[in-house]
Length: 351
Image (cartoon, rainbow, N blue to C red; front, side):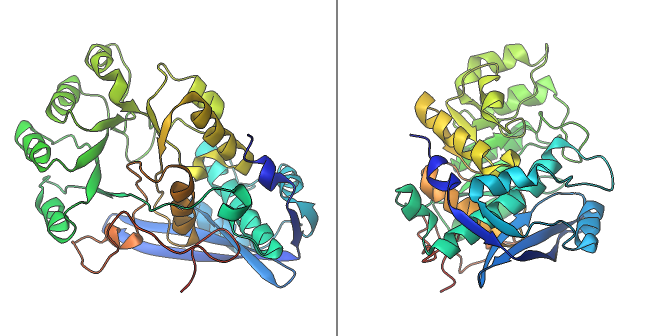
């Protein structure tokens, strides 16, 4: 069954759109900027979120306003084809990821609007029940790294698991402390990024310490080099991928067929490409989990919704935004989490 086929023919009326900028000071070094895309038509509004990381590109996008002629009568598929006519970054060159992120904002807003105009929720149209969503918390361990906050979160939420980015200063003592918690589910080696602030050069000694010291954790995005290959090969069943995955072809092109893979909707850009990936993983017996992009608005709700549809049991890095707080905080929903879907559209009920 091609799941996108249930969506492609949805009627969609667009009268226009507007943009809304969001920002949040995440750390002293990082202020997150994103843009809400609000498509309007027939008295309804559909919303998506552009999670492009470049703050200047976000400012230019917002400053241009509703510059593209998107009004008209469409199906969801014909609107996607209309987007092929537009350069998402007219001010200059952009990387593949940023183009996908911006396109996803329009495609997810169109899905939300089409569903609202049809008076139906996404789960119903697909014929898939939303299930309780298991999630992990993604966090840094500080500099110098320490497990203090991790233990603080676990005191408040004893069943909470974690996805952690490896740091250059991790040592054997820290790794043993992490292992003792039994709470580390995914270790991100950041080896698949190039030219970004989060790149982590492959250090064989660090790879060996992490692979041997955290045997229960999935290993995400290692850098496969002549020096790391002998270390990684014995652990190939634990290796999962995130940053390189934008399409089914990217999954097929991996060195080894993964047992588990990170499907981030915004990386796919097109709804059709995302749903093709869901179908491919289902057909090939590849388990999935979801990941976030520091969404500040509706984008977080939408990736949670998709995770609850397609891979609710995975180590989903889609925790409610409160888990991004710099210090452990109470009063947040513990997983597995069962939010309520909106009566129509692509998101949660506001109540």
